[in-house]
Amino acid sequence: MSKQYNRQEIYDKLLEILVDEFEIQKDLINPDANLFEDLDFDSIDAVDLAVKLQFFTNKKIKPEDFKEIRTINDVVNAVEELLK
Image (spheres, rainbow, N blue to C red):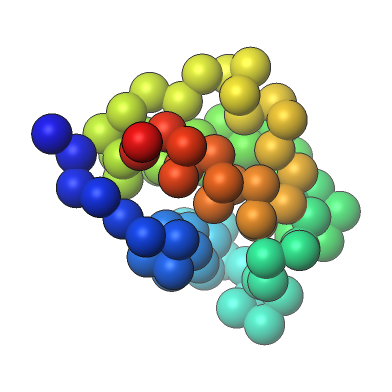
């Protein structure tokens, strides 16, 4: 059984991944930040993030679910939904 995380814990883990793994400046990251426009993500970065989130959640993220994600808040919502 997966550990239950609240929104803040999910956000904090996402922040840690973005800063440590993707070398994104912490002050650029906020719930409304667009992964592609504000944080300069490309499709490979998105796949890498999905893989890292799979390790965090121990659940597989469906590619079609990840295609709809644009903002940090979208990522948090998707992870939260995945963990239900």
